[in-house]
Image (cartoon, rainbow, N blue to C red; front, side, top):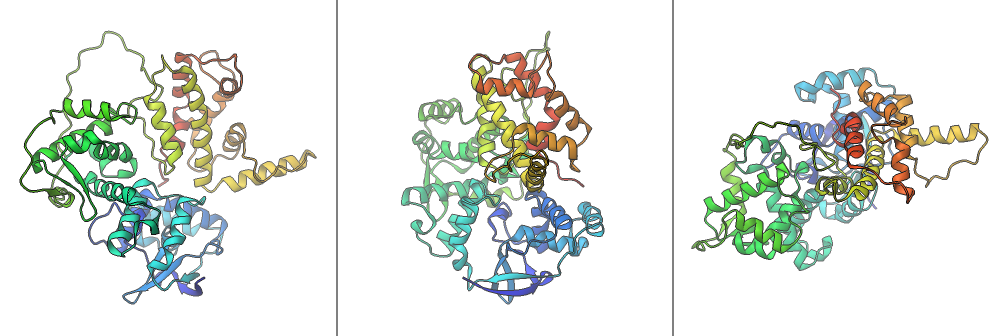
Length: 478
Protein backbone atom coordinates (compact mmCIF):
# COMPACT_ATOMS: atom_id res chain seq x y z
CA UNK A 1 0.00 0.00 0.00
CA UNK A 2 2.88 2.38 0.89
CA UNK A 3 6.52 2.47 -0.12
CA UNK A 4 8.88 1.05 2.51
CA UNK A 5 12.16 2.87 3.15
CA UNK A 6 14.91 2.71 5.75
CA UNK A 7 15.19 5.77 7.97
CA UNK A 8 17.40 6.74 10.93
CA UNK A 9 15.48 6.66 14.23
CA UNK A 10 17.09 9.96 15.23
CA UNK A 11 15.58 11.64 12.15
CA UNK A 12 12.01 10.57 12.92
CA UNK A 13 9.73 13.12 14.61
CA UNK A 14 7.06 12.16 17.11
CA UNK A 15 3.62 13.41 16.13
CA UNK A 16 2.21 16.17 18.41
CA UNK A 17 -1.23 15.50 16.86
CA UNK A 18 -1.23 11.87 17.99
CA UNK A 19 -4.55 11.13 19.80
CA UNK A 20 -2.57 9.61 22.69
CA UNK A 21 -1.14 13.10 23.25
CA UNK A 22 -4.43 14.97 22.89
CA UNK A 23 -4.38 15.85 26.60
CA UNK A 24 -1.48 18.21 25.84
CA UNK A 25 -2.62 21.62 24.65
CA UNK A 26 -0.58 24.21 22.80
CA UNK A 27 2.83 23.74 21.21
CA UNK A 28 5.15 21.13 22.69
CA UNK A 29 8.72 20.01 22.05
CA UNK A 30 9.81 16.47 21.23
CA UNK A 31 11.03 16.20 24.83
CA UNK A 32 7.53 17.05 26.08
CA UNK A 33 6.06 14.33 23.89
CA UNK A 34 8.58 11.77 25.14
CA UNK A 35 7.76 12.67 28.75
CA UNK A 36 4.02 12.30 28.15
CA UNK A 37 4.42 8.92 26.46
CA UNK A 38 6.65 7.66 29.28
CA UNK A 39 4.24 8.85 31.94
CA UNK A 40 0.99 7.59 30.48
CA UNK A 41 1.53 5.25 27.52
CA UNK A 42 3.84 2.51 28.87
CA UNK A 43 6.87 3.35 26.73
CA UNK A 44 8.97 1.74 29.46
CA UNK A 45 7.18 -1.55 28.92
CA UNK A 46 7.85 -1.40 25.19
CA UNK A 47 11.50 -0.47 25.78
CA UNK A 48 11.91 -3.46 28.12
CA UNK A 49 10.48 -5.78 25.48
CA UNK A 50 12.79 -4.39 22.78
CA UNK A 51 15.84 -4.62 25.05
CA UNK A 52 15.03 -8.23 25.92
CA UNK A 53 13.61 -9.65 22.69
CA UNK A 54 14.75 -7.19 20.03
CA UNK A 55 12.84 -4.83 17.77
CA UNK A 56 10.16 -6.61 15.77
CA UNK A 57 10.46 -5.18 12.28
CA UNK A 58 7.20 -6.79 11.13
CA UNK A 59 5.26 -3.89 12.66
CA UNK A 60 6.37 -1.01 10.47
CA UNK A 61 5.76 2.57 11.69
CA UNK A 62 3.85 4.74 9.22
CA UNK A 63 5.32 8.18 8.49
CA UNK A 64 4.68 11.12 6.22
CA UNK A 65 6.62 14.24 5.22
CA UNK A 66 5.46 17.50 6.80
CA UNK A 67 7.51 20.72 6.66
CA UNK A 68 10.65 18.81 5.65
CA UNK A 69 10.26 16.51 8.67
CA UNK A 70 9.53 12.79 8.68
CA UNK A 71 6.63 12.63 11.16
CA UNK A 72 5.51 9.33 12.70
CA UNK A 73 1.73 9.05 12.22
CA UNK A 74 1.43 5.49 13.48
CA UNK A 75 3.92 3.82 15.84
CA UNK A 76 4.89 6.72 18.12
CA UNK A 77 5.28 4.54 21.22
CA UNK A 78 7.69 2.13 19.51
CA UNK A 79 9.72 4.93 17.97
CA UNK A 80 9.86 6.75 21.32
CA UNK A 81 11.15 3.57 23.00
CA UNK A 82 13.89 3.20 20.37
CA UNK A 83 14.91 6.86 20.71
CA UNK A 84 15.26 6.51 24.48
CA UNK A 85 17.23 3.26 24.26
CA UNK A 86 19.61 4.75 21.71
CA UNK A 87 19.99 8.01 23.63
CA UNK A 88 18.80 7.79 27.29
CA UNK A 89 19.79 11.44 27.83
CA UNK A 90 16.61 12.39 25.93
CA UNK A 91 14.46 11.04 28.77
CA UNK A 92 13.24 13.34 31.55
CA UNK A 93 15.80 13.59 34.35
CA UNK A 94 13.97 11.20 36.69
CA UNK A 95 13.88 8.47 34.05
CA UNK A 96 17.37 8.74 32.50
CA UNK A 97 19.10 6.36 34.86
CA UNK A 98 16.40 3.76 34.26
CA UNK A 99 16.74 3.94 30.45
CA UNK A 100 20.56 4.01 30.65
CA UNK A 101 20.61 0.85 32.78
CA UNK A 102 18.16 -0.85 30.40
CA UNK A 103 20.18 0.13 27.33
CA UNK A 104 23.48 -0.99 28.89
CA UNK A 105 22.07 -4.39 29.77
CA UNK A 106 20.07 -4.95 26.58
CA UNK A 107 20.25 -8.57 25.43
CA UNK A 108 19.28 -7.60 21.88
CA UNK A 109 20.76 -5.09 19.46
CA UNK A 110 18.95 -1.76 19.34
CA UNK A 111 18.64 -0.70 15.67
CA UNK A 112 19.69 2.83 14.73
CA UNK A 113 17.79 2.55 11.44
CA UNK A 114 14.40 0.97 10.87
CA UNK A 115 12.03 0.34 7.98
CA UNK A 116 9.09 2.72 7.77
CA UNK A 117 6.06 2.93 5.50
CA UNK A 118 5.83 6.32 3.80
CA UNK A 119 2.30 7.64 3.26
CA UNK A 120 1.53 10.52 0.94
CA UNK A 121 -0.34 12.40 3.67
CA UNK A 122 -2.18 11.95 6.95
CA UNK A 123 -5.41 11.36 5.06
CA UNK A 124 -3.96 8.17 3.61
CA UNK A 125 -3.49 6.72 7.09
CA UNK A 126 -6.95 7.43 8.56
CA UNK A 127 -8.75 4.16 7.79
CA UNK A 128 -5.69 2.16 8.85
CA UNK A 129 -5.66 3.97 12.21
CA UNK A 130 -9.39 3.47 12.78
CA UNK A 131 -9.12 -0.28 12.16
CA UNK A 132 -5.92 -0.66 14.16
CA UNK A 133 -7.02 1.20 17.27
CA UNK A 134 -10.66 0.18 17.52
CA UNK A 135 -10.65 -3.44 16.34
CA UNK A 136 -7.18 -4.95 16.66
CA UNK A 137 -5.24 -6.24 19.73
CA UNK A 138 -3.00 -3.15 19.62
CA UNK A 139 -3.37 -1.11 22.82
CA UNK A 140 -6.59 0.77 22.01
CA UNK A 141 -7.24 4.46 22.32
CA UNK A 142 -9.68 5.15 25.09
CA UNK A 143 -12.95 6.92 24.34
CA UNK A 144 -11.56 10.41 24.84
CA UNK A 145 -8.57 9.75 22.57
CA UNK A 146 -10.80 8.38 19.83
CA UNK A 147 -13.15 11.38 20.07
CA UNK A 148 -10.20 13.76 19.79
CA UNK A 149 -9.05 11.88 16.70
CA UNK A 150 -12.51 12.00 15.07
CA UNK A 151 -13.03 15.70 15.77
CA UNK A 152 -9.57 16.59 14.45
CA UNK A 153 -10.48 14.89 11.18
CA UNK A 154 -13.88 16.61 10.97
CA UNK A 155 -12.61 20.10 11.78
CA UNK A 156 -9.10 20.22 10.38
CA UNK A 157 -9.13 17.89 7.43
CA UNK A 158 -12.63 18.24 6.02
CA UNK A 159 -13.86 14.70 6.59
CA UNK A 160 -17.58 13.92 6.63
CA UNK A 161 -19.04 12.09 9.66
CA UNK A 162 -19.54 8.89 7.68
CA UNK A 163 -15.85 8.78 6.82
CA UNK A 164 -14.95 8.23 10.48
CA UNK A 165 -17.91 6.00 11.38
CA UNK A 166 -20.16 8.72 12.74
CA UNK A 167 -23.70 9.81 11.96
CA UNK A 168 -24.69 13.47 12.19
CA UNK A 169 -26.05 12.80 15.68
CA UNK A 170 -22.98 10.97 16.96
CA UNK A 171 -20.74 13.58 15.34
CA UNK A 172 -22.36 16.19 17.59
CA UNK A 173 -21.70 13.92 20.58
CA UNK A 174 -18.08 13.51 19.48
CA UNK A 175 -17.64 17.30 19.34
CA UNK A 176 -19.15 17.62 22.82
CA UNK A 177 -16.97 14.90 24.37
CA UNK A 178 -13.79 16.22 22.74
CA UNK A 179 -14.51 19.68 24.17
CA UNK A 180 -15.19 18.27 27.64
CA UNK A 181 -11.91 16.33 27.35
CA UNK A 182 -10.08 19.64 26.81
CA UNK A 183 -12.00 21.59 29.47
CA UNK A 184 -11.68 18.91 32.14
CA UNK A 185 -8.02 19.39 33.16
CA UNK A 186 -8.46 23.18 33.04
CA UNK A 187 -11.23 23.47 35.65
CA UNK A 188 -10.39 25.06 39.04
CA UNK A 189 -11.11 21.88 40.96
CA UNK A 190 -10.12 21.08 44.54
CA UNK A 191 -6.60 19.79 45.04
CA UNK A 192 -7.71 16.24 45.87
CA UNK A 193 -9.44 16.02 42.47
CA UNK A 194 -6.81 17.79 40.36
CA UNK A 195 -4.66 14.67 40.01
CA UNK A 196 -7.54 12.93 38.25
CA UNK A 197 -8.72 15.79 36.07
CA UNK A 198 -5.19 16.64 34.95
CA UNK A 199 -5.11 13.17 33.41
CA UNK A 200 -8.51 12.52 31.76
CA UNK A 201 -7.45 8.91 31.16
CA UNK A 202 -8.41 8.24 34.78
CA UNK A 203 -11.62 10.29 34.86
CA UNK A 204 -15.10 8.84 34.02
CA UNK A 205 -15.54 11.09 30.99
CA UNK A 206 -18.40 9.02 29.58
CA UNK A 207 -20.51 9.75 32.68
CA UNK A 208 -19.80 13.47 32.42
CA UNK A 209 -20.75 13.35 28.74
CA UNK A 210 -23.97 11.51 29.64
CA UNK A 211 -24.93 14.34 31.98
CA UNK A 212 -24.07 17.06 29.47
CA UNK A 213 -25.92 15.41 26.57
CA UNK A 214 -29.04 14.41 28.51
CA UNK A 215 -32.28 16.35 28.12
CA UNK A 216 -32.07 17.66 31.69
CA UNK A 217 -28.36 18.40 31.39
CA UNK A 218 -28.85 20.51 28.28
CA UNK A 219 -31.79 22.34 29.86
CA UNK A 220 -30.37 23.04 33.33
CA UNK A 221 -26.83 23.78 32.14
CA UNK A 222 -28.25 25.78 29.21
CA UNK A 223 -25.89 23.87 26.96
CA UNK A 224 -25.88 23.32 23.22
CA UNK A 225 -23.53 21.18 21.12
CA UNK A 226 -21.56 22.96 18.42
CA UNK A 227 -19.51 21.57 15.54
CA UNK A 228 -17.26 24.60 15.77
CA UNK A 229 -16.84 24.92 19.53
CA UNK A 230 -17.77 21.48 20.87
CA UNK A 231 -20.35 23.11 23.10
CA UNK A 232 -21.60 26.55 24.13
CA UNK A 233 -23.54 27.52 27.22
CA UNK A 234 -26.13 30.26 27.63
CA UNK A 235 -25.57 30.30 31.39
CA UNK A 236 -23.32 33.00 32.82
CA UNK A 237 -19.69 31.98 32.48
CA UNK A 238 -18.98 32.06 36.22
CA UNK A 239 -22.08 30.06 37.14
CA UNK A 240 -21.50 27.40 34.49
CA UNK A 241 -17.87 26.97 35.50
CA UNK A 242 -18.87 26.60 39.16
CA UNK A 243 -21.58 24.07 38.29
CA UNK A 244 -19.35 22.00 36.00
CA UNK A 245 -16.55 22.06 38.58
CA UNK A 246 -18.92 20.72 41.25
CA UNK A 247 -20.15 17.95 38.95
CA UNK A 248 -16.58 16.96 38.05
CA UNK A 249 -15.56 16.87 41.72
CA UNK A 250 -18.52 14.66 42.62
CA UNK A 251 -17.69 12.24 39.81
CA UNK A 252 -13.97 12.17 40.61
CA UNK A 253 -14.64 11.43 44.28
CA UNK A 254 -17.21 8.76 43.52
CA UNK A 255 -20.05 10.69 45.18
CA UNK A 256 -21.87 10.24 41.86
CA UNK A 257 -21.26 7.62 39.18
CA UNK A 258 -22.73 5.95 36.11
CA UNK A 259 -25.18 3.94 38.22
CA UNK A 260 -26.53 6.80 40.30
CA UNK A 261 -26.91 8.90 37.13
CA UNK A 262 -28.19 6.21 34.77
CA UNK A 263 -31.41 7.95 33.63
CA UNK A 264 -32.59 11.43 32.77
CA UNK A 265 -34.74 11.57 35.90
CA UNK A 266 -31.77 10.88 38.19
CA UNK A 267 -29.63 13.43 36.31
CA UNK A 268 -32.43 16.00 36.64
CA UNK A 269 -32.72 15.43 40.37
CA UNK A 270 -28.97 15.65 40.88
CA UNK A 271 -28.53 18.89 38.92
CA UNK A 272 -31.51 20.49 40.66
CA UNK A 273 -29.96 19.57 44.01
CA UNK A 274 -27.03 21.78 42.98
CA UNK A 275 -29.36 24.73 42.62
CA UNK A 276 -29.33 24.82 38.83
CA UNK A 277 -33.06 25.15 38.28
CA UNK A 278 -34.08 28.55 36.91
CA UNK A 279 -31.75 31.42 36.21
CA UNK A 280 -31.81 33.77 33.28
CA UNK A 281 -30.45 32.93 29.88
CA UNK A 282 -27.32 34.97 29.13
CA UNK A 283 -27.37 37.50 26.31
CA UNK A 284 -24.47 35.76 24.55
CA UNK A 285 -23.27 32.17 24.47
CA UNK A 286 -19.92 31.20 26.01
CA UNK A 287 -17.91 28.61 24.02
CA UNK A 288 -15.90 25.75 25.54
CA UNK A 289 -12.62 27.45 24.60
CA UNK A 290 -13.31 30.26 27.07
CA UNK A 291 -12.92 27.85 29.98
CA UNK A 292 -9.77 26.27 28.58
CA UNK A 293 -8.07 29.63 27.97
CA UNK A 294 -9.00 31.09 31.36
CA UNK A 295 -7.99 28.11 33.42
CA UNK A 296 -4.46 27.84 32.07
CA UNK A 297 -3.43 30.27 34.81
CA UNK A 298 -5.67 28.86 37.53
CA UNK A 299 -4.40 26.78 40.45
CA UNK A 300 -6.46 24.10 42.19
CA UNK A 301 -8.54 25.14 45.14
CA UNK A 302 -7.89 23.50 48.51
CA UNK A 303 -9.95 20.40 49.06
CA UNK A 304 -13.39 21.04 50.52
CA UNK A 305 -13.34 20.43 54.23
CA UNK A 306 -15.88 17.86 55.28
CA UNK A 307 -17.24 17.80 58.79
CA UNK A 308 -16.63 14.45 60.38
CA UNK A 309 -17.88 13.12 63.66
CA UNK A 310 -15.67 10.88 65.74
CA UNK A 311 -16.57 7.29 65.00
CA UNK A 312 -17.23 5.11 68.02
CA UNK A 313 -16.89 1.93 65.99
CA UNK A 314 -15.27 1.31 62.63
CA UNK A 315 -17.99 0.47 60.12
CA UNK A 316 -17.60 -2.01 57.33
CA UNK A 317 -17.57 -0.59 53.81
CA UNK A 318 -20.83 -1.23 51.97
CA UNK A 319 -19.17 -1.94 48.61
CA UNK A 320 -16.44 -4.34 47.57
CA UNK A 321 -14.04 -1.76 46.14
CA UNK A 322 -12.48 0.39 48.90
CA UNK A 323 -13.04 4.17 48.52
CA UNK A 324 -10.28 5.77 46.46
CA UNK A 325 -8.92 2.48 45.11
CA UNK A 326 -7.32 3.34 41.74
CA UNK A 327 -7.95 1.76 38.35
CA UNK A 328 -5.61 3.16 35.70
CA UNK A 329 -5.51 0.68 32.83
CA UNK A 330 -6.10 1.48 29.18
CA UNK A 331 -8.76 -1.17 28.69
CA UNK A 332 -12.40 -0.18 28.35
CA UNK A 333 -13.86 -3.51 29.51
CA UNK A 334 -11.74 -3.66 32.67
CA UNK A 335 -12.68 -0.06 33.45
CA UNK A 336 -16.39 -0.85 32.99
CA UNK A 337 -16.23 -3.95 35.19
CA UNK A 338 -14.40 -1.93 37.86
CA UNK A 339 -16.99 0.88 37.68
CA UNK A 340 -19.85 -1.61 37.96
CA UNK A 341 -18.26 -3.21 41.03
CA UNK A 342 -17.86 0.22 42.62
CA UNK A 343 -21.58 0.87 42.23
CA UNK A 344 -22.95 -2.39 43.69
CA UNK A 345 -23.77 -2.76 47.40
CA UNK A 346 -22.62 -6.00 48.98
CA UNK A 347 -25.81 -6.46 50.96
CA UNK A 348 -27.93 -6.45 47.79
CA UNK A 349 -25.73 -8.00 45.09
CA UNK A 350 -23.43 -10.60 46.67
CA UNK A 351 -23.74 -13.07 43.78
CA UNK A 352 -23.27 -10.49 41.03
CA UNK A 353 -20.29 -9.01 42.88
CA UNK A 354 -18.71 -12.45 43.31
CA UNK A 355 -18.94 -13.21 39.59
CA UNK A 356 -17.75 -9.73 38.56
CA UNK A 357 -14.86 -9.91 41.04
CA UNK A 358 -13.70 -13.22 39.53
CA UNK A 359 -13.99 -11.70 36.03
CA UNK A 360 -12.05 -8.58 37.06
CA UNK A 361 -9.21 -10.73 38.40
CA UNK A 362 -9.04 -12.81 35.22
CA UNK A 363 -9.14 -9.81 32.86
CA UNK A 364 -6.81 -7.72 35.03
CA UNK A 365 -4.09 -10.38 35.33
CA UNK A 366 -4.34 -11.20 31.61
CA UNK A 367 -4.04 -7.51 30.69
CA UNK A 368 -1.04 -7.09 32.99
CA UNK A 369 0.78 -10.02 31.38
CA UNK A 370 -0.06 -8.87 27.87
CA UNK A 371 0.99 -5.25 28.47
CA UNK A 372 4.20 -6.38 30.17
CA UNK A 373 5.17 -8.52 27.19
CA UNK A 374 4.85 -11.78 29.19
CA UNK A 375 1.81 -13.34 27.52
CA UNK A 376 3.67 -14.97 24.65
CA UNK A 377 6.24 -16.52 27.00
CA UNK A 378 3.45 -17.81 29.24
CA UNK A 379 1.85 -19.58 26.26
CA UNK A 380 5.19 -21.09 25.22
CA UNK A 381 5.82 -22.34 28.75
CA UNK A 382 2.35 -23.90 28.95
CA UNK A 383 2.79 -25.57 25.57
CA UNK A 384 6.19 -26.93 26.57
CA UNK A 385 4.82 -28.32 29.83
CA UNK A 386 1.96 -30.00 27.98
CA UNK A 387 4.30 -31.57 25.45
CA UNK A 388 6.67 -32.77 28.18
CA UNK A 389 3.78 -34.63 29.81
CA UNK A 390 2.94 -36.25 26.48
CA UNK A 391 -0.37 -34.47 26.12
CA UNK A 392 -1.98 -32.90 23.09
CA UNK A 393 -0.58 -29.39 22.42
CA UNK A 394 -2.91 -26.63 23.53
CA UNK A 395 -4.81 -24.89 20.73
CA UNK A 396 -3.62 -21.33 20.09
CA UNK A 397 -7.07 -19.85 20.72
CA UNK A 398 -7.39 -21.37 24.21
CA UNK A 399 -6.80 -18.66 26.80
CA UNK A 400 -4.67 -19.49 29.87
CA UNK A 401 -6.65 -20.00 33.06
CA UNK A 402 -6.37 -17.62 35.99
CA UNK A 403 -4.58 -20.35 37.96
CA UNK A 404 -2.04 -20.80 35.13
CA UNK A 405 -1.43 -17.05 34.89
CA UNK A 406 -0.98 -16.63 38.65
CA UNK A 407 1.31 -19.68 38.83
CA UNK A 408 3.45 -18.27 36.02
CA UNK A 409 3.80 -14.92 37.85
CA UNK A 410 4.66 -16.78 41.06
CA UNK A 411 7.31 -18.92 39.35
CA UNK A 412 8.87 -16.21 37.16
CA UNK A 413 8.56 -13.10 39.38
CA UNK A 414 8.60 -10.28 36.77
CA UNK A 415 10.63 -7.22 37.80
CA UNK A 416 7.63 -5.24 39.07
CA UNK A 417 6.31 -8.09 41.24
CA UNK A 418 7.37 -7.71 44.87
CA UNK A 419 7.15 -10.02 47.87
CA UNK A 420 3.72 -8.72 48.88
CA UNK A 421 2.26 -9.68 45.50
CA UNK A 422 3.82 -13.15 45.61
CA UNK A 423 2.48 -13.72 49.12
CA UNK A 424 -1.00 -12.57 48.06
CA UNK A 425 -0.94 -15.07 45.17
CA UNK A 426 0.21 -17.94 47.41
CA UNK A 427 -2.49 -17.16 50.00
CA UNK A 428 -5.15 -16.89 47.28
CA UNK A 429 -4.29 -20.36 45.96
CA UNK A 430 -4.56 -21.87 49.46
CA UNK A 431 -7.81 -22.72 51.22
CA UNK A 432 -8.60 -20.27 54.04
CA UNK A 433 -11.30 -20.03 56.67
CA UNK A 434 -11.36 -16.22 56.55
CA UNK A 435 -11.29 -15.30 52.86
CA UNK A 436 -12.16 -16.89 49.55
CA UNK A 437 -9.49 -18.75 47.63
CA UNK A 438 -9.24 -19.17 43.86
CA UNK A 439 -11.17 -22.44 43.91
CA UNK A 440 -13.94 -20.78 45.97
CA UNK A 441 -14.34 -18.05 43.35
CA UNK A 442 -14.41 -20.68 40.61
CA UNK A 443 -17.18 -22.51 42.46
CA UNK A 444 -19.16 -19.28 42.86
CA UNK A 445 -19.13 -18.88 39.08
CA UNK A 446 -19.81 -22.51 38.11
CA UNK A 447 -21.61 -24.19 41.02
CA UNK A 448 -25.26 -23.27 41.56
CA UNK A 449 -25.07 -24.29 45.22
CA UNK A 450 -22.15 -22.08 46.22
CA UNK A 451 -22.80 -18.43 47.11
CA UNK A 452 -20.40 -15.80 48.52
CA UNK A 453 -20.87 -13.78 51.68
CA UNK A 454 -20.32 -10.04 52.01
CA UNK A 455 -17.64 -10.38 54.69
CA UNK A 456 -15.80 -13.06 52.70
CA UNK A 457 -15.75 -10.87 49.61
CA UNK A 458 -14.43 -7.87 51.56
CA UNK A 459 -11.67 -9.91 53.20
CA UNK A 460 -10.73 -11.48 49.86
CA UNK A 461 -10.34 -8.09 48.17
CA UNK A 462 -8.21 -6.87 51.08
CA UNK A 463 -6.02 -9.99 51.02
CA UNK A 464 -5.41 -9.43 47.29
CA UNK A 465 -4.74 -5.70 47.63
CA UNK A 466 -1.11 -5.89 46.44
CA UNK A 467 -1.99 -8.02 43.39
CA UNK A 468 -4.99 -5.84 42.49
CA UNK A 469 -2.91 -2.67 42.67
CA UNK A 470 -0.28 -4.26 40.43
CA UNK A 471 -2.73 -5.21 37.67
CA UNK A 472 -5.23 -2.33 37.96
CA UNK A 473 -2.90 0.56 38.68
CA UNK A 474 0.61 -0.43 37.62
CA UNK A 475 3.51 1.78 38.69
CA UNK A 476 6.24 1.95 36.06
CA UNK A 477 9.59 0.79 37.37
CA UNK A 478 12.14 3.58 37.90
